[in-house]
Image 1 (tube, rainbow, N blue to C red):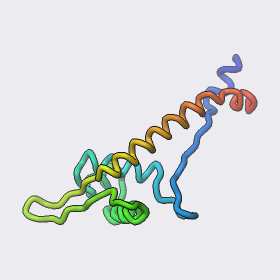
Image 2 (image 1 turned 120 degrees about the horizontal axis):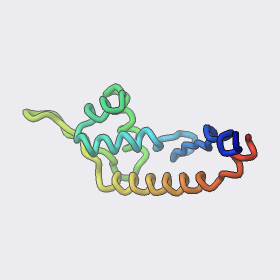
Image 3 (image 1 turned 90 degrees about the horizontal axis):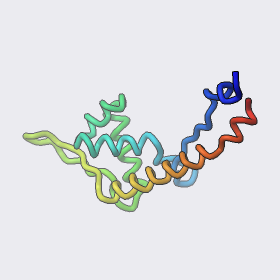
Image 4 (image 1 turned 30 degrees about the vertical axis):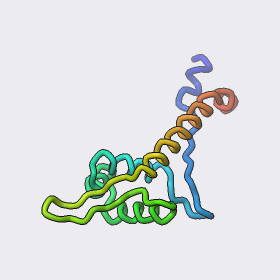
Length: 120
């Protein structure tokens, strides 16, 4: 067995969040929720896709909106055709920047092969 095979299963993993003081409010989960809301146009459908309760998804949206100068999600009241949810242009910018940072971090981690070699 060569050295490459010895550490094929080892990899560096990381997650990062944006925090307000000690409170984490934007990270992988909220970013994915915003993407699902954008796709589905509905908080309940987005929550279902992520296996979240509607209540948990609603609480995440409230937290996001409370920690931002501008709303990230606008919820529409139900009516004859039902309600809905919409991500705002401000949210789209945050999602884009978060995804860009994620990509840069992944590229940086990919370059750290030496650490994995040392951990044989």
